[in-house]
Amino acid sequence: MKSAFAPLYDSNGIKTAVLGVEASVDYFDALSGLKENLYYSTVLSMAGGLVLGIIFLLIQRSINRLQQHLFLNETQSYLGRMVAVVSHELKNPLAIIRASAERLKKKHSSPESVFVIEEVDRLNEIVSGYLDFAGAGATNMAGLNPEEFNLSDLVGNIKKHFRDKYPYREISWTKETIPDKVFITGYSRGLRQVLLNLLINGADSCLAAGRPIKVGVAVVDSEKTVTLTVIDHGPGIPRKHLKRIFEPFYTTRQAGSGLGLHLSKKIVEEMGGKIIIKSKEQIGTEVVVTLPKHPT
Image (cartoon, rainbow, N blue to C red; front, top):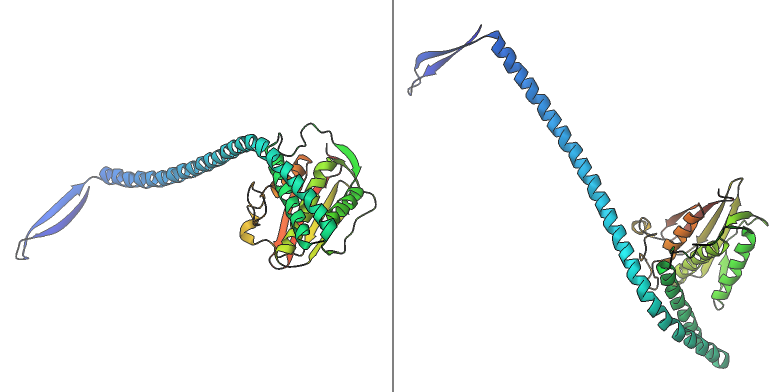
């Protein structure tokens, strides 16, 4: 038996009695066990609440991703129906405007006609981007068979086409390394679209910042992979935009559609490769595309 005593006082503060409590050892053992059980129950409840919270967070993230995916699919479906009409209505007038501007340029050599041609070409690219995004497979690679081609020749053709796109602009090329022959297996048309889009992005970034066009393409050939690096000396991409740079319709330029990089990423991934962007503000941007030479 265990005993405990405590004095009792009246209203004047005078001791009038003593209160005694007695309990067996078994009672105190049971009380100690109850405290221990209560402690473990509290810990388990907190752990269970934490686990449930994590599960709820993961479920919520999955729901958000699913909602975003459904929204994107719905947007693409609406866009596909809209583009079929809008693209036809736009491309014909744009072709007429461009042809008229070309004739004016030949007759009068006015800078306004050159500006019109450049803007018409820009609009054509935006419309084509929407067409690619809304089309089956989103990259127009569906149904094509991979082919072996010389990447060095492809880069040379792209550079020529790129120069033709800016006939009235001075273009400076950074020192670049391109081997004479680099054979890979993939979609030459898709890769051409990717590299040309990256060069145009770099050139437009330079022009938007009031800088001369200065870009470059480098090719590094290794045993199993090939790495292409597209460089521009534009104003760079702010860090806050880099995480979302590949999202469809996300753009940092007023004249962009926000689809070029999204489609480029999908094409590279369809070829079994990856694409990353490194950028420093006021210094420039570097886009690195790594591809398997002969994907299985």
